[in-house]
Image (cartoon, rainbow, N blue to C red):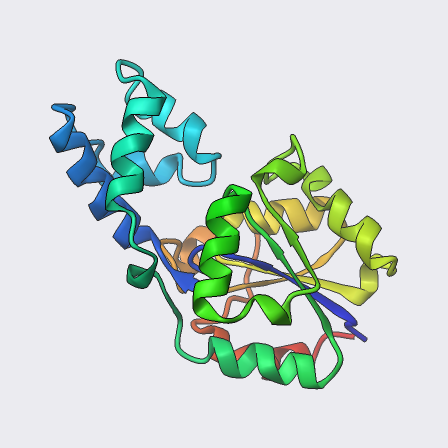
Length: 211
């Protein structure tokens, strides 16, 4: 049975993509840059943020961009999906260890987990500084697996992107896909994953079927 769950963060636990796309479009306009198209922006959303901005706006100094980003970023605008608090409380009550796998930097993610008052539920958090590997590289799980000291068949990964599935599949970790973000059921099927959930609210019932 599953003894630990690793959650992706953005668009899995919190609603973020549309907010960040809007916010970064405003930043680009303020800096007299041509805003990235929605397609170009989301094609790079899986990368660490600094790398993403360097690709989209190579003409701007990253420090100048991040100065504007820090001014505009408001944690209150990032809210959890319906049912997140209830689901993680259920898993905590069942003594299932919960972790987060994110490419956010440590200070930003700590701030937000504390803001949402869900930091106490997670036994381990992987941030951008935790590893040089990013999804879909399966080595992105190494530090979490070292912490858990469990067999891989006892671990489940939950994410909203096909790259999440590819990473889990290569690492031989069970996976559940949530189509709560920008990726659709069809996007997952194109990566050969066919068992998505439309909402994290269904996760507690789904995990009962995983042996």
